[in-house]
Image (cartoon, rainbow, N blue to C red; front, side, top):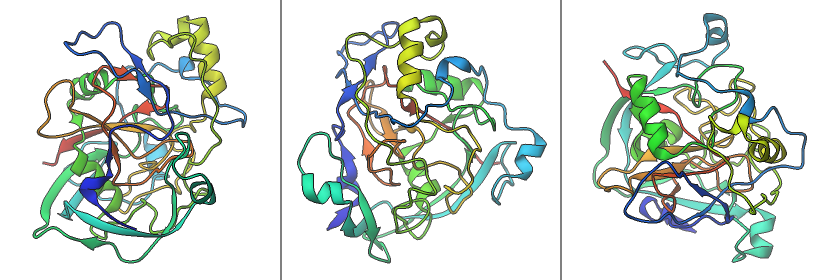
Length: 310
């Protein structure tokens, strides 16, 4: 089925779980209060509560030596250069869907997962747009060996990027850093590869009886600590270098969802989630979930930062 790029924004996730409205954030509108996130029955790594990074400093030189090849000119340490001609609207034809989707399509807990796309993708825009920017090689805190930060709202992610002298990536920047000029459906190509990316872990129902704390408060909250330990299936930053985009960006599909800014929108609708996470969800380059507001946060929601190239 052909899917134009603008059709890949979704107002609600296939997996409806507990998403939270940060009590410290004020808004004239109420939160949607629902969200995407899943977990695994496999042994969980250390919970988010065990790490509380306070800045986006890059990995040390030894770790950088192990990173995938990438352009870095015009970018600060820990970031890679993304440059080329971006197609705003793309058609991608799925030729083989996941067996679960084929047998249970339409169920609320079943996400559309494509196992293989027809090659090549087709640009349906009249013109391509030249992009040149820097993006964090890894998810925040962009430090090899640590776990990606989650339980973080779009507003907090934006503030953390700005404190580090960066900004949240735009929707188009994320797309291009993931898919490249070839408009690949996945960072790794036209075929869904679970062995390369942290995706397709089994769904585990979260405890919806109580609200999880935000990331920095989670270590001191017994319920949040235990729930995060039970649900968490992130892998550490740099644990694998197999899920890498054409530009050298690591884990841009899977592991944790990533907040981006949707240009042209106003508060509280500037927030989008992209890339997918460890659960059985789309985890592709183009789809953007726009259901969650700027003050919402979830246990699989993280981010990375971008910056203008010099």
